[in-house]
Amino acid sequence: MSERRIIYLDNNSTTKVPTEVVNAMLPFFDEIYANSSSRHRFGFLAEQAISKARKQVATLVGASYPEEIVFTSGATEAINQVIKAVLPENTKRRHIVTCQTEHKAILDVCAYAEKVLGYRVTYLPVKDNGLIDLDVLADVLSEDVALVAVMYVNNETGVIQPIQKIAEMSHRVGAICFSDYTQALGKVPVNLSQDGVDIACFNAHKFHGPKGVGGIWCTSKVQDGMRLRISPLLHGGGHEKGKRSGTLNVPAIVGMGVAAEIAFLEMESNIKKMEYLRNFFEDKIKKSIDGVKINSETAPRVCNTSNITINAIDSEALIAALCPEDEGAPWVVISNGSACSSHTIEPSYVLRAMGLSEDDAAGSIRVSLSKFTTEEEIDIAVDRISFAVKELRELAAL
Ligand SMILES: Cc1ncc(COP(=O)(O)O)c(C=O)c1O
Image (tube, rainbow, N blue to C red; front, side, top):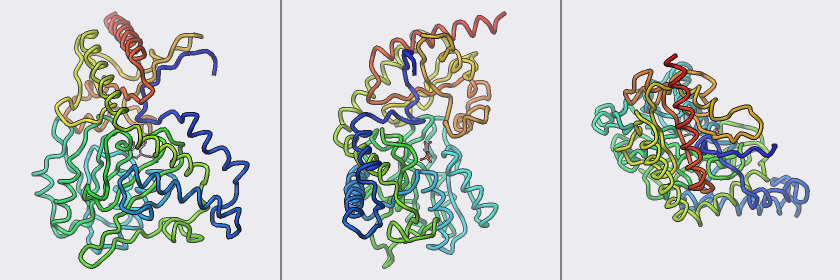
């Protein structure tokens, strides 16, 4: 990259991998490059590194035992495994309850479960602040529900769902509670052994680890005399104790472990810092631009995420204007929804489910901070957003 300054405010899409994480991964490419399944001493070195990473990840997520973690290629794979493999093995019930504002990784697999596996799927609506209405959940829960899949932290709005309550309600009807924790790790203290959910998924690249690695956590608690079994989606070799076959990506798993350890140790101060800067951003943007509304302001929200609607603006045009081609001009990198679905240019379905009009949803942006974000960057970002909004509104008025 050239000299261009990048003010990166799209950390819910992915995060920077810092030097200490990269350095921890490097020896596993060209020094300890053994296969962690190999039964020679060289392989044991790789296996030891995997075992250390499993402990580091277990600590971050609050697992009771490191063995509760199964490494996967990321959250999408984990979600596919839970719905396509774990679920059919564990229950004869045929109804899945999820929510309209889930990530596409859940929604698309639920659609598959509906069309191909013959499950009935209920998509819960949300209130205008993005929270699930627990009375509506209570109404749909019955003895035919196999799985309740509700994410802990929403990737677009940062809304934190009352997952403990949702887990408790799911268990009352004997359903498995599965939650996507991808946007929570490093941004809210997580304790999966106490949250009450049965299965959770996550990835490394949202907490400054590498892309292409993640995991499933599954409780090892015995419930009603039974232990939930993690059945494989990928067969072939029996890696991860038969729960996920395929040679382990040792460098990536090591990177995930180190990123998890750092996230765990720095969590309290990082949360304080990001929350301060998020509030600073929201105060400043409200003062700088007319017609700004903070979405989900009244709901519990994760510390780093701000989703705002700007009147009479097309977010696509704004995002483009903030990354000009001109050489040397800084880029302010923001988004208008989830990176995974942003190839489809349509207003966010998450905001639409919260009752925003098509125009308001199309005029909404997401700003997501990281521990590396500075106050100076927020100052520059707000100035540039205000300037671009003014120009776009003037153009539209011509
Ligand atoms: C909430 C949520 N779930 C799932 C995913 C998919 O994760 P992965 O990139 O590891 O497949 C993402 C990331 O984009 C996400 O934000």
